[in-house]
Length: 499
Image 1: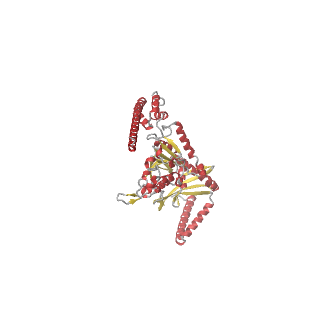
Image 2 (image 1 turned 90 degrees about the horizontal axis):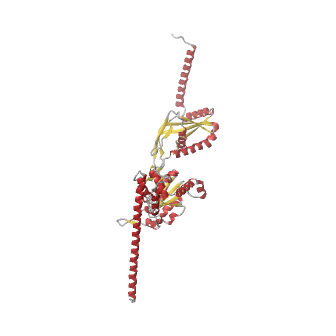
Image 3 (image 1 turned 180 degrees about the vertical axis):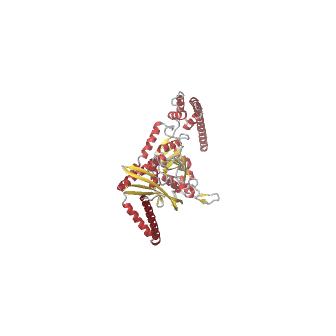
């Protein structure tokens, strides 16, 4: 039999005292629950926690995911800010690949902690997530709601004496760094009108795909001076937010790209988007029926975007203001009754207000690009500065453009056949698209360039024959007109009795 020692007796006494205290606490809790109102219990608990906190030097800020029924932008900023400072020895992390994105997102698992320093201040971040009763939060497009069964928030803890520094400087630092992270992770999008937008849901107005177009200013078949001018204009535009605000102008820039088909207008648009890291919104005016729908689409586009209206001269009747009267005038249907609802009513004035009116200020840092094959068909009101600020003529392929295409397609610089090709281009109109098509026919530079020379020679002959045919037709028409005038003169003389 093991003899009892003073240590064992002391341990038993401690355990007995702890058990007695626990039983007493349970009894007091049961009595309090039965005889003390819930509100009073909560008040006492709050005062007790406040008393304990008064002896602590630590202050904790709570950043919840939702502020009442709205998304808390500071919570999203904290998620982005913490991602790059997660320590390499972290035991549990959550990773995800958002829909239509290319980059994996890394975030903290629940109850994980991260330590950060700012200006010598030590701070502790803790991510907390817990289940709650289902509640409904308005969706991002403000139509309908989504069920939420989880409450998520960050706890930011630090010494009380640093409260003013954290609130005034550190939180701003978190927001700025999160913006930088958002730009790095951003995937460019190409938006087009959704087929379901007629349901009235703003979130379904546009549908998007990733913008993977590889065009850059280095690959464009344009004159170097012209490319440099465009890039300098774009850089000046994005740096002048305060200037636009000071002079009272909406922060936007209008471009008109005009020239024959195949001269690289779409490639230039993609190069601008890639250069600025802007999304593209492709707006098809023929799909719209009213000016109000046009305004609604403008409001739903995001900042830092390129809004594109291609073939503006063909998409809608904008050559003159008669189109407005025609759009507003009721037209008879097959049964002879007039109806206005089905008439296309996007008018010239509606488009001008969209480009340069009050509605054009609904957003910042936007590029608006119109393209056309026939600039002369556009109403002069659309061409003035403030609507189409920069006019860029996309012309036929030049020797400089050919060198760029040869480098892109064949990976070559100077070549003995280049001189002959450049001489033919001086006298023959050929688009960059046609040059690219010829260079794609062979991976061997010699064969590809000889094929291009043959194409240029045939095109030169065709152009000369076409020009000769047009001259002959014009001459024949002039001769026919001369005969007709002589016959009319002779008839007039006969009527007067001169003949």
